[in-house]
Image 1 (cartoon, rainbow, N blue to C red):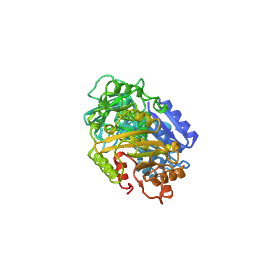
Image 2 (image 1 turned 90 degrees about the vertical axis):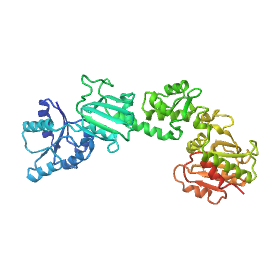
Image 3 (image 1 turned 30 degrees about the horizontal axis):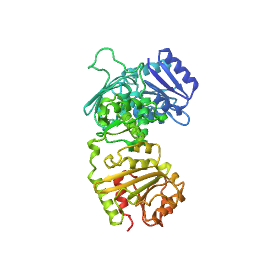
Image 4 (image 1 turned 135 degrees about the vertical axis):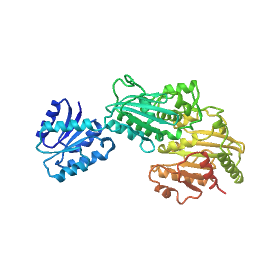
Length: 495
């Protein structure tokens, strides 16, 4: 039995073809609307298409061209039907990629015979197919096999890991990649950018009945949609993702899990890190889910303050040379300009204010502060940041001490009650431009310098708000870390 799509704007012709094909045991979907053809061809698995040439709005020629252009439908056999019987029309159809061309009126029995012959003779697309993921991505490859309703075994190798995917009529029956199985194996393969693959109709390496990862053969598209969701979700918290070699541990109790993450194994991974601190690289090898899922969970837990780097981990004990140099230069400039390096009310203070919409940028700055600089250790810093509460970080360096305070601008009270900071870092939005102007003026009048981070959206209002003020600087790039802020503030400290 084959699955056939029949397209003709004549209801009578459609009915005759459908009844004839079904009489021979074929599964038929018919449509008189050419606009629905490509949607059906992408969603369903057809062994052949019967296509009328003369149709309103979209002709059979146009549909044939589109079918042949798209990877997932390019190999489907197509038989053209037309009242145009001239040789040039037949030649046109064959040259555009049609497998056969029948002139109306036609004998339905002849149509079935020709169609079955084409299906039987046509080599399966993907048989003997091989290549590299640098040329054809895994997503393109698996979509092609899915949409072409192919049956066979896909072997692949990427780095130290090998994998296999078994398909039946384009549906997944088994997937293995490294230590992962089923859905997680496919999600892992989606990320491949290098490696080789080979697809064959038979698997001579594994004779006998095939195993199965799904109760019933699974569709490819829902897994690809989940991979896209994981990628988009990670993009929203990627700034909280630690380096792959940094050892992480679970801390305290996991906060309430956001609704959009409840389907992820958040608690299981948190409990694993509580019992066995591990790096991302180690989690990729030991936690039985795809790396893209692990990254999303770890970044989200880090943002919540539920995980952090292990105290004493070599990746956080020593400062980078560039950050060490930036701190020394900043503090030396502060001393030269009359500031004290003692950790008291007259010491060096940097105060940060953020709008609700720009809080994540401020959070990224605070989370970038290495733990070795924190006088009181990690404390509740991640939780304060996650809960959008203001706070204070006391920082100690061999060159001196300084303080970072942070708050939402909605908590602002002018005039400022605390001692004037040496520098103010503003993370504005466009909604309260008068508030930001008043805050910047207050800081500058009290001898502070102002660093303004790029807000989300249109930035033209920055010049309107701050352009005539002295000692302010626009940070054109997104705020990434403490080193960047200190280097920029050093350039505009008051004389």
